[in-house]
Length: 392
Image 1 (tube, helix red, strand yellow):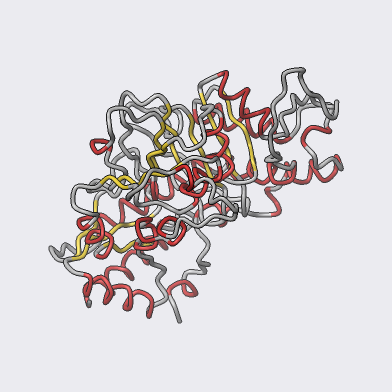
Image 2 (image 1 turned 90 degrees about the vertical axis):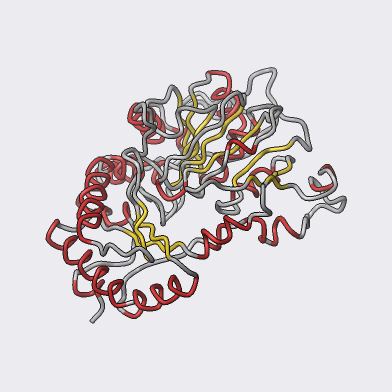
């Protein structure tokens, strides 16, 4: 019998384990109201309640709910009012959605190599950089560059993380984006959120996300005389209701992750060739990251954990320098847009051709933590991981 079955676990991360019909008061309210479109309500919509609640929780001036985090990234970039072909510096280690969001805005991604934490290395940026996306990957709080007017924080995997000064990730740059995809800290299956402290940025994003309109609750639709075009990124009431329910459990979830992380750091084997990497105080402890002495040892650990039914993953899939979306420069437009506006040559910034980063990725192993488990079950789960890794 696998570990998951013994402990009654499913391989569903974080927020999914807090979904329960008995706790869905907001969703029942939306269904009873029988209005699922947020701008059709004459009173405060569930989406507006979610935005208000999330902005308060994160310490942001404004929040806007959308379909997914990719749309949130697009809104943040579009609100900077760029020109087609402008460069956007993005992490070389992140999900391809970041580069896709940049390209779909008519902008050109430049891959920036990672530092030791596998976050974007801000020291590689040129002094004239204007737009930078920094990804807080797997709950790790990344360093933000200074002197860049438009720093977009991709917080898809780090909801609840804080900088050393106490600010939430997503609130220190120009804008922050969050995901409610199934594999994220909180989930509604899909869903996104963009936050900003900038009044003008929020006004632009709000109009663009709804066909350029200036929606007035209960009055459908309304446009200002100076309206610009936009797209439909408007979230629905039922999705917002699930997200609101999820926010209610955020502190409980974060505390559960912290508790299991502390147990793991005290229990896991002290091996020089297979080290668990410590996390900073403000990180969201979504997983344990192990750094192995070699790729071969990493692969052996993966095989042993998998055989015991212990969830784990590696990070090589996040290296964008080898992703076909970027290496092929293909486009659905006949003229190759927006790649036809890209400069010639490689669009990368690295001191060693990403050799060090490839090596780090090849030797890194992640094991998720389970915040929903009771403490005694967290101890059992950690002991199972220890038993497997000691035998590798």
